[in-house]
Amino acid sequence: MNARGRILSALAAASMALSPVAAAQVPPDDLFRPMTTDQIDQFVDALRSNIPLAIRPQNSSQQVDSDLAGLWAGSKTKVESSMGPLVLRFRPKTDVLLSLADVGGVAEKTVLDYFDVTVTMKGGRVVVEHSHFSDRRDVGGVLSRIDRLKDPTRSAFIQGQKQSGFYVSIPTARDPMASWGFMVCPREMSVEFLGGSRSISLKPSSYELSEVMSTADMSVQSTLATAGQKGKVSVQLFASPGLPEPKSKRDEAVSTVPTGALLYSPATPFDFSRFAPSHDVQLGLVALVEMQNKVGYIRRHYFSHQRLLHRTDEPSPVKLVIGRTAVRSDLGDCYMVFEQRYSWMTYDKQPATFK
Image (tube, rainbow, N blue to C red; front, side, top):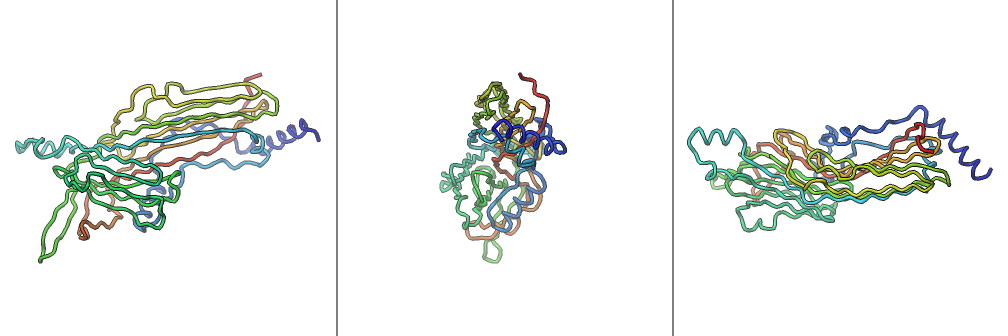
């Protein structure tokens, strides 16, 4: 059988394989979804059991016949992405400000206008910094090597000015390039001496997560192998709410060697976006590379790089020790954060609109 015959045979086989499992394009709103219950449970288990974190993706590739998958042999797609430091901005709760006003208090003397928790990940190192720390020993923040799988979860309390303290717990990560995360819990620390020994209690904070900010980058380049026939490649970029829209959202090419490329260039400067009163926020980018051959077969390849934030009032799974003293009680909200990078594919067939 010659080359043309092999191509036609593969197309015929793909038609039989594809018919019952065609998948439409994922709507843009569904590309940015809150943490699932399963993902939250995995996060809690990693912290409670002191094991490396590995978060399952929300999407998986569609399973198709090998003949259909083989139609895209030789095609190439390269995606590079990164996210800059994550800044969590905490502000006083509304009820705290109202109670201060009721008693004639001056808010500026009692609480900060805001404080920031900045989290930076580079390689296998995560650094968490407090903008208004009160102890000079915390000037460099908390450092964790999340790529050392045998290391325990790193947990530390940073005392802040005007009761703006918090503790952070950072588990090691099974694959830091694919997913990693941490939990931050704002708290007010109370120290008592009972029977000559020190007792530490952590109480709900006067502050809550108000705004979040992160930068992001993504570049995409894709080429469809067509065996000399015309084909189409389209590349699209989607930004989550809270990130600037891309200046260029789509690139498309039709030829015997079609190539599409996009670079995320934000239409407006990066800035803080609201979190409160939400319980969930997503920050990130998704690229969609769609390839279609002359017969109409389509492969959609999604590339997601996101940070997911979730607020919880469930009891913390972390057993915290501060200055060699185990915390006696720990009450208040916590914020789970994880970053994930992964891709998945779906397949479809629609009449080709190009000639």
